[in-house]
Image (cartoon, rainbow, N blue to C red):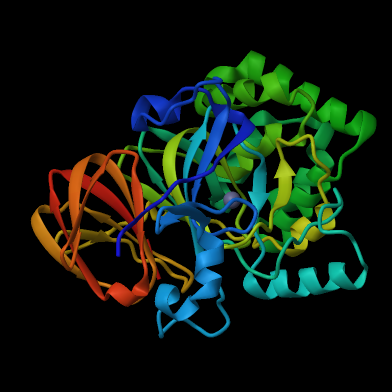
Length: 393
Ligand SMILES: [Zn+2]
């Protein structure tokens, strides 16, 4: 059985009005800020499929027949798709964020439940008890920040900035750069309020105006952020975090407990089924510094490790995903490939068109279209000049 997905689109102020239509041809009649298109069975915004001519939510059909959809090998703990795949179109930057580890999410969720904080309260950090590792695959050039820079690089940047207003909080990190001193420095900066915060930000902006040529990449980002968040402590983020622009066809993984932000671009994102976000800047929302710092690993990621390299296996580019919640391949079928199935799978056509065949059932999937297979089909074949993103587990 091949089911064509009808997918909900989420509008957020940072979303692009044009990117999803321009690339995928998905209509946007009201010129909305189309930020995300969700492919999956998330109860808040589930994709739909047609069953005997009736449109039904994927989350409902899966819960009615979990073994058919999810497969025998699915862990008994999962009752629905363990992943969510999205098309993501960032015109403006998203907030800087950290996602908790599985253990951190379980503890945080239980504690907030115990305190009876409503799930939709602004002060609520944990929406569920799951972690949220992510992979992003660039369709257009995709600008982002991911992970702390090497300690020496952070020292050099702040040394060059030479900001008197934060000299006292930077000095201990400078004299002994390590993860403990970075934690202290980072949380002290995030905790600045009132006049001290205003002073630090003004001094940063002034210094970049005077000595901007020393930091061209960072200046461009700060200017971009400043237009939206003129007084946000996140203006310091490019001096702490790796700044990376993925080329189309490149991917990177975003680990738990690692600060990151998407800044601009169109991509496919796949993640574990969770909504747990701790914010660290570039946001009008409240930042819970203590909770954020407790869920952040203050370890650098070397820049050369940021891009995730896929392994080519029989017409598939297979990404070495380090978690069990999802797997992700790019398929270039050409003259044809058979693929065996042991979980529910979603295919999204990224370019051209591809013929998908299950037993005697044949479907042409064109750019922007997506289909889902239940685990019960066991295998399918693909053929044609196009490219597919494949999400499974
Ligand atoms: Zn994220």
